[in-house]
Length: 150
Image (tube, rainbow, N blue to C red):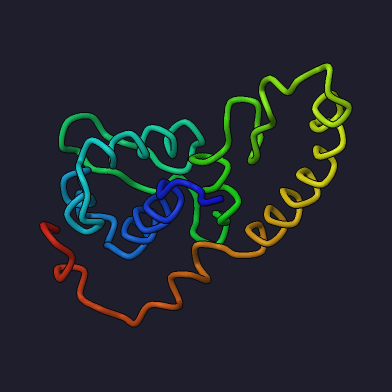
């Protein structure tokens, strides 16, 4: 199973925001250029991040900023903002197994504890990594080297 690309894109967006000086207005177009994707996708992910109170977005071309310090934002925060379904599940269950089948009528019940255990392990791992730690993995550079940043 592969998760969507929303998670790594959201992490890249947050790192861009953390890396650039606060007086630089970072727009969805600028982030889209850096991520090499469509600005509409960036705006959709920005909506998730805003709803999770990880970013604030100024109207128009006012730019975007982080709402917390980078040592307070974990990969789990980002994951929860962009990847979980409405019912907070990482794994989907079988919608309509055959209730007449001895396997089908219990598959979700039997599988669910193992899926929850896997989710808990993933979340514990993501909670241990902050945006600050990731930012340290990148060498210092001139923010003006990012596409369309000014």
